[in-house]
Length: 410
Ligand SMILES: Cc1cc2nc3c(=O)[nH]c(=O)nc-3n(C[C@H](O)[C@H](O)[C@H](O)COP(=O)(O)OP(=O)(O)OC[C@H]3O[C@@H](n4cnc5c(N)ncnc54)[C@H](O)[C@@H]3O)c2cc1C
Image (cartoon, rainbow, N blue to C red; front, side):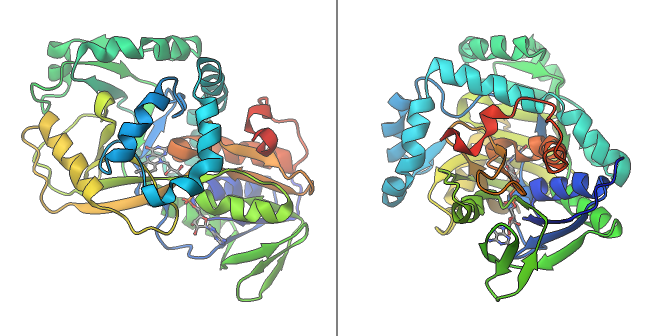
């Protein structure tokens, strides 16, 4: 690896910031990670664990506009906008609605596909040096359907197949022989093998932090307050000069980029789950219940049932009735499921209107870089983002066209 020693700061110790630090350190930079709570909870610790290469479709799907009024009225539905928050959501929502057309949908899916095509290789690079590959279960994935609506998803599969992603249709008998815990509600499924699952996403994050410390990366407790082109200042007044800076502060990143003159309509899609230690059933792989918009992931510590998209900002307390509603849905598909003793969790997905992350250089500062907004796919896209950011910092050409990921696109 070439060495280009410089003092690099990364803001954010989520999976995206850690991956940036990994690839920067690998190319010889002196790296310090600033986080207001490096050992605290964050989206990267409690997610569903998927490396979901085929999950390239944006949330702003054609037809979603007609469903929004229903979503507004159902606080426990798959997508909810808290009424009191709706007016603050407008900068995001107006762009989301504009993106919900066939052309933009297909374009975003192509761009996401171009980013995720190397996801397994880039996570593999991290595994090779950290020894964390044993946490990845490569058992593929099933989209489970309760009705023949699987046909409605076929246009999505045409887009995926153009990206070289293969899928197999399973009828009810095939499905039940693959996943005997499924009850009569499960009618058919689509299987993909281009999918893997971290059996403990928190262990992956913590293991990566340990590796980075061993490699000389420093972690500082710092709640970043202000910044400019050469210094970051914590809310406690401590100053951190830098030569290169990466902003990877998840759903809070836009507050920092704005100070550098780069506005971004970043929002948080709050997601919920429950991890059940003794579910009484076992699944052989991660399942997505396509029409009901939730997932079940077998993990080392139990079965994690989760999903939901809730727009209610960064400060509203969690509404764990959502986690409970997801368990009720899960019990319909998995009749023997024991839901007792679960741990409920909510995380802030950093979300952009077109579901594409921001991977870019600051418009006014050539030494500042952005890596945030990965939405539902932050774990999946983290390693590739880290590799790309390290290339940008070195002044190299990125391995893919980063135009769709520019902050100025909004
Ligand atoms: C329910 C749920 C399920 C999910 N499932 C999956 C999945 O299966 N696969 C997948 O790929 N993705 C999944 N995701 C998405 C994924 O978890 C996120 O996209 C990803 O974790 C975002 O990582 P991040 O590093 O950008 O942000 P975070 O993990 O939120 O980290 C951001 C860090 O920045 C720090 N920070 C913020 N502001 C400041 C500041 N001013 N000063 C200092 N520090 C600051 C925070 O303390 C935090 O530690 C899921 C998300 C949820 C909620």
